[in-house]
Image (cartoon, rainbow, N blue to C red; front, side, top):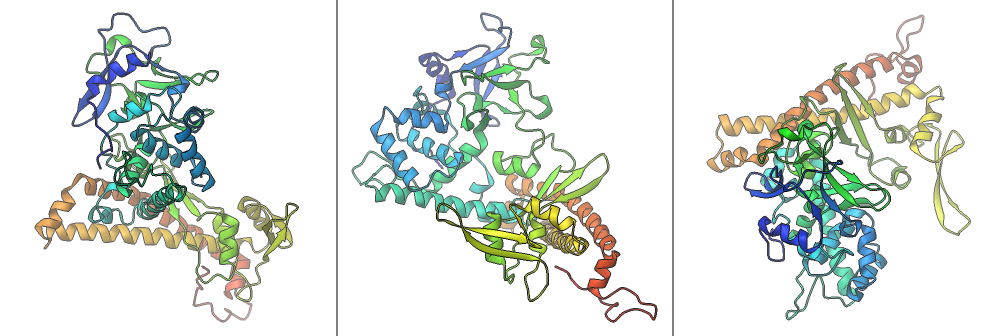
Length: 498
């Protein structure tokens, strides 16, 4: 996707910094095919680094944030009207959407920050960000079975809906900013551009204390260094200014003109998040991801389905946590316990939903377990744990997550068999070319990384299931507890509790 404005070479960036009186020292701005626009150390600067080792100082007015955008709108009537329209349409439900619109407006020449740098700085941003949301369908298929398969599909649907909502809201208000007349100087906001802007936000934004998700010019050029990171960003809690600094542990005398300035994007982020948000798998990726998330489908035939969806507010996600020191996997998903409770007449589980009117006249859903009102799933788990049937519900939840793990493993096995068939069997030249692409190779590598954890999780969950099946209350529920005369009817068949 080509950004809707003229792109500028990185060699002209120092002039923009000087124009905006941005303090910077010991920095070289370098463009390369492998790294894109990036930052390198300049040992030949005329003066030494200050005591805090500051390479760059940016005032808060130049940070692209929700607060700064609204502050800028106070002196620009057109910007104020656009933001007002989108807020009335309830478009700004999260900071990511706000930043996407801010970038779209900056590309169209509107001042979206108090300092006024962003309408120029966007001309230095990359014209393409290679995230999975930009991949071709034939490439996305190789993510089947990985932690990105379901989130990526959902993300593409969300981006399409968001783009349409932004355009329709402004058009309905008589604004031509995103869907202009033929003779207008404005540019249409297309889905391709919206996906590109989302990629820029996800790959370049920072979490700034007190401001939330923001974009910070220049600092967003620093690449990921993992354990080799030699710089950090620092925020002045009083002024909101942001600085890029060399880490205290780095020997300045060892830095040369070939030393790239590197940040650590997140030591605990799993490989799937790196690929989803940054478009690469880091070279220092661990032999197994620390966490894997599993979307848990809601049982479609549950009489309480609508009430459970409304109560949860979002689809349930299970987290598998791998601990290298013990080579073990644990899982966490309190929402599963709500799904494990079955509505009558299929079960006598003590779960009830009702709708109640509160003092402001609105209606809300109220959930009760065994007669006790609970506000969230964490409270529900505490109540369920104290009930004599707790092992039954724990078994149902375990079986549900075990089924998802097995489905994920089947998907990964299917992809591997397909790869083998193409490379070793009768794949066409076109299919072989697709598999060799870097995108597909990263997808296959991600699958291999996650497969080991999923296999370990399956082993652990099967052991947990067997242990729960030995509980007396579970045996009685299944009709498997032996009597003095012998086994009860049905002992030979284990019922699927899920």
